[in-house]
Image (cartoon, rainbow, N blue to C red; front, side, top):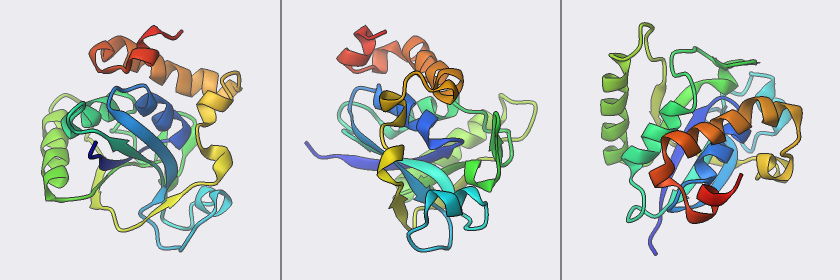
Length: 182
């Protein structure tokens, strides 16, 4: 199987990771940092808002099973792209809405999607579309956070509703295990 990679930031990476992991054709989702100017940043540095990084996820997927366009649709359905530098209770540039493209085709698709989406909202879509220069994997305790901490209050209030939304709105895109789990 040949995989491709997509990189998205839409608030806390725990939430975005959890929503993407239930999709059929997604083989791995890694939480991390991108878009900043500090080499190998730590969570503490990124949370300070001084590094320029966003919390993002890298999604490894099989393009024969799920398309980049479908990943964009799920990504934009699970966060508010009109909120500048925030998502829900998380505030700061590290929580900005951003698509980091890996090639010209991803850039083209992301730009077209945002242009079409902009017409659906009263407020402007503020999602940044930038080339991915470097992705830094987050510390191990951030990986699979929702899966490892399902009773965490933040996860119950913010990640769980996103996963439920994906299961309801995108049932046809779920992997078999996610479609049958509670």
